[in-house]
Amino acid sequence: MKTLKQMREESEKCLRCGLCQIVCPIYNVLGSEPAVARAKVRLARELAGDVLKVTPRMRKIMSLCLNCKACVANCPSQVHTDKLVLAARAQIKDEDGLPFLLGAALKQFLPNNSLQGVAAKSAYLYQHLGLQQAVRGSGLLKAVSPDLAQKEGVMPEFAPRTFRAELANMTLKKGGKVKVAYYLSCMTNMVNPALGKAVIEVLERHGCEVVIPTDVQCCGTPQLAYGDVETAEALARNNARLLAATGADYILTDCGTCGDTLRHYEELTADAAGFEQKVLDVSEFLVDKLGVKPGDKPVEAVVTYHDSCHLNRGQGVNRQPREILKAIPGLTFREMAEADRCCGGAGTFAITNYDLSMAILDRKVGNIKAVNPTIVAAGCPACKMQLEHGLARNNVGATVAHPVELLAKTY
Image (cartoon, rainbow, N blue to C red):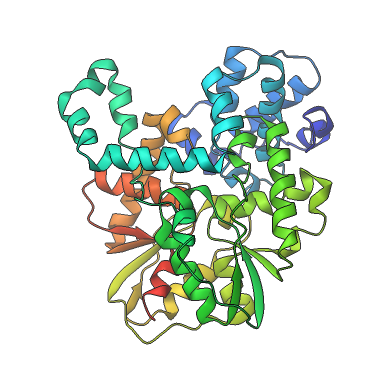
């Protein structure tokens, strides 16, 4: 991955026209110039040239970016502000280090599949043995911090068993017209194993042999977001080696964010040469490579679709999920306004900047309510978590599902 100094030329492409103001969700809420892309590009250039030094204000400004890439898509000069911000965060991390707990989470917890399993089980027990209800009812969280009580509400519903545990009792079909390696994301593993089962069923229904290297680790997105490039590179080397060793024709993901990072593994490690051409989102693979074949069972519902930023602008996948939804018998598709506008999740952004994230999310929920769906489809588990929180806090009765989960219901 290029350093900020190596990317200084990229920052000099900015014309300072301000068109990024129109599409930046954060600028839309704050209305503050430092929040928008052209300001971050200018700061990145000065930081790269040693004109400015890392300060708490610099750290704060660079943290106020969702990496949604809307500014890049709307920029006449195609300045990659998203990459400049990540490079700036890496330089800030190299100079200041990481807070202890955050560093432990990025370096020790997220890459450790066993620890993830223990944490997911503990979270499930917390939510289902009455502890969560008791803690919320006691007012303890509000007493410690009103913010803490709000942020705890973002916590997703954890599964009783991880997908890795479920896989131990599953028999995958051998042979097929296409061999695909399914990359197991952390969210599918800990929060939504049903999505993993749906992906396998749909792929096997389409004549694929599915192989799942269960030793793959976190894709590296959280580490890159906080500037920990060294750990991200180590994860990329391990994941690229394991996925390449399967000998699969394609490497598939069900997560827009993971897929976007996997497609850029060549920037992190030489071991991933040629990797990008093999990585596809599962909806892209079904529509473009095989031709989607739904079953006969109707799914009687009204659905709208939210574009994940990393799936849409990151990977250019937006038509294929809609084609899947429109092919499902019984399902009525309604396009919402601003379907490609960020929902404000962005990993831990919803926790570290709760009020700002909710302001962005409420605009998304307003667009959802306008088309009155019973289901909101999304191709990224992190967006699903954020949307579920937004629907609940606005008393909207719709559920959220991955397009492939809905497709699996037709068989």
